[in-house]
Length: 449
Ligand SMILES: *[C@@H]1O[C@H](CO)[C@@H](O)[C@H](O)[C@H]1NC(C)=O
Ligand SMILES: *[C@@H]1O[C@H](CO)[C@@H](O)[C@H](O)[C@H]1NC(C)=O
Ligand SMILES: *[C@@H]1O[C@H](CO)[C@@H](O)[C@H](O)[C@H]1NC(C)=O
Ligand SMILES: *[C@@H]1O[C@H](CO)[C@@H](O)[C@H](O)[C@H]1NC(C)=O
Ligand SMILES: *[C@@H]1O[C@H](CO)[C@@H](O)[C@H](O)[C@H]1NC(C)=O
Ligand SMILES: *[C@@H]1O[C@H](CO)[C@@H](O)[C@H](O)[C@H]1NC(C)=O
Ligand SMILES: *[C@@H]1O[C@H](CO)[C@@H](O)[C@H](O)[C@H]1NC(C)=O
Ligand SMILES: *[C@@H]1O[C@H](CO)[C@@H](O)[C@H](O)[C@H]1NC(C)=O
Ligand SMILES: *[C@@H]1O[C@H](CO)[C@@H](O)[C@H](O)[C@H]1NC(C)=O
Ligand SMILES: *[C@@H]1O[C@H](CO)[C@@H](O)[C@H](O)[C@H]1NC(C)=O
Image 1 (cartoon, rainbow, N blue to C red):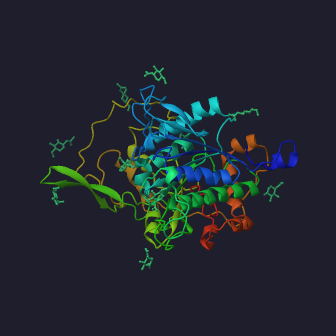
Image 2 (cartoon, protein in one colour):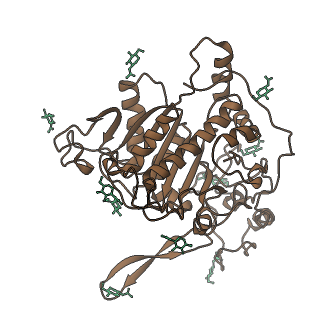
Image 3 (cartoon, rainbow, N blue to C red):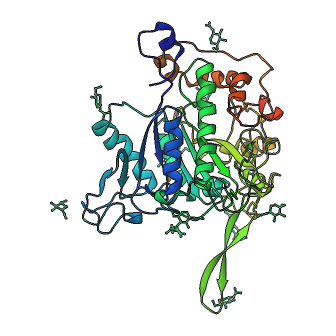
């Protein structure tokens, strides 16, 4: 159940801090990382389920693939479930842990539409956690490529707050190999990453509860977390990284196709390209998550939204009017007459094809006059409006239904959540002064983590 001020005050229901939480990943339901996170979230008193792929499904992004086989044609990872078993089922040892033979995104859907209605008493999950992944997922590029993030944004798109978590430690091990203590006398990296992840989720849960309850994140919002290499197998060099507020863009790497003349094959080469690193939405003063992970021992926490639309008008009125570049062929829905897309006037000869530049390129033809003035906004693309300090923050203390139907006020509740310094002190997380800065032109959520 959700924590809500109304519930507590009414005293009609048993007071419970436990939320209903789904965990998935792309490494499979039997890996150490996901099972350690399951344990850590249960230790916080939550009602936790795992629904995850039966085998490794790395690199699938948001692809949805359901198996076409009723039964497994091979053993699950680590031999936990044998070939011939149904393609979906519970772990032999725990009825809250489910495997499915499908991609991470498919697993989240199966969790919501099959496991939840048939095998739980729940109506939905309050939060979806994905990971911790074996290997980092840094930058918008990985946002579309990684199964960890595919599961995350699938949940967000289904209206459920979600956090994707990835760690630099990359060796997938089974859950029954988690070492109580390592050779260095420390906790297993899987245990440490799970505790870090659980602490972050619990910080969010605590802050929202203190702000009056409701959704953990506004509709359409998710969080991407990356944890540096936890060195506890060898030393305590990096076993307690601080969480740093970051953004997806900034230092992010995309791939180049490198052709090998000898083999006739391609391989990847890294490219830090401005295309993937353009700051358009949110707080451009934040460091890129990729750059954070280059530091000594720090975790990056980026807030994202599933709204890929370019900023134009609205609060961010300084956004460029890119849509006018599509006039007159592309019309507004409220135009009195809509002209068919095949009915184009003879195109003018265009002598220059625009290359990536922020200055207007020459456009010839009869429509040039309509297009050029609107391009002036391209240079001032970054949104700079701030909320005035301590104003515009409204708490909604109504029922759950009220909150869920009002994502705007939910967002503002979040703005208020960071004021809860007490909540922050509960956890061993380090709060940076700059985290409390209010900058929400395009809806940044300040979590205070
Ligand atoms: C999981 O799949 C990815 C992508 O195919 C691969 O790089 C990785 O080695 C696999 N891991 C295991 C343990 O099989
Ligand atoms: C799947 O396995 C069950 C037993 O677990 C068996 O009865 C059934 O025939 C199998 N179905 C297929 C299509 O292999
Ligand atoms: C659902 O709730 C009933 C009644 O509280 C309980 O007996 C049952 O075990 C619950 N089922 C699950 C799957 O949690
Ligand atoms: C962890 O323990 C397992 C046995 O439970 C062992 O096989 C493995 O080598 C250990 N790993 C390390 C890094 O010590
Ligand atoms: C609503 O909740 C906030 C945070 O808990 C509190 O500061 C505020 O006084 C409450 N407002 C009302 C009207 O109850
Ligand atoms: C720990 O960090 C120090 C300083 O960065 C480095 O010199 C040392 O080699 C590291 N030790 C291990 C075991 O990684
Ligand atoms: C091309 O592939 C061959 C064979 O694997 C390898 O020896 C060579 O180093 C590669 N060349 C480059 C430029 O990577
Ligand atoms: C027509 O639609 C556009 C885009 O939605 C809007 O900006 C404009 O104000 C509308 N015009 C009228 C007359 O409603
Ligand atoms: C094409 O559009 C023009 C107005 O831009 C209109 O006068 C003409 O009737 C249209 N032709 C067709 C075939 O729709
Ligand atoms: C476009 O340019 C070509 C070559 O410069 C010319 O032959 C043609 O007439 C031009 N077309 C129009 C519509 O101006």
